[in-house]
Image (cartoon, rainbow, N blue to C red; front, side, top):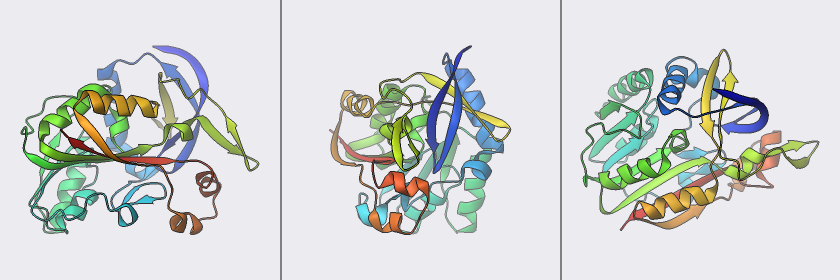
Length: 268
């Protein structure tokens, strides 16, 4: 149900989107809309963010959040085309598992990993739903620019906690919420929406559409705490070396405020 048309600067990957339409969220509709987009236009229009990048201007090579993953069991939430799973497979992880809402992305991941001589257990499912993933099994669960698609953040974090062994690690990245509120206009940062607005909205993109919500940083932190995680590291700072390699307006913006955030949390 459409409520009203609003301006919401939205960052998905590394591209900004201007106009959006505020909507009432119904999870099955969100699943259908978002899975259809990733089945068709997703990678072509938005591109894929994969390790060693966590998002715009933040990298694992600099942050070193995973450390040595050899012999570890890894589960990726929102595995996309499988390149982040390959990253860990190349580093001798013992088991690779992935889930994604898009059947097409699962197909791409299967083909990519097979071509790299790697095997993985891949499951097509919304991250919020029970889908047969074993509990208390994984050393690491991670999500590279995918966790923000969930329709139920607390439920998703609770499920992720159930997948992890005691003291297991959960690492995820997403677009920094302050970035969603601010636009760069003539080298001046201008607020375009309230930071506290977490309503769902639809964005039209290249003959398709996506449905999303911009959550506050505190919403993520509190949901982690409720699910039994303790945060070990929160990264907001962009990597100056990566920024220097770009002269785009987006890079200029990243020098002034965080555009990506990464959390490393441990299951108690």
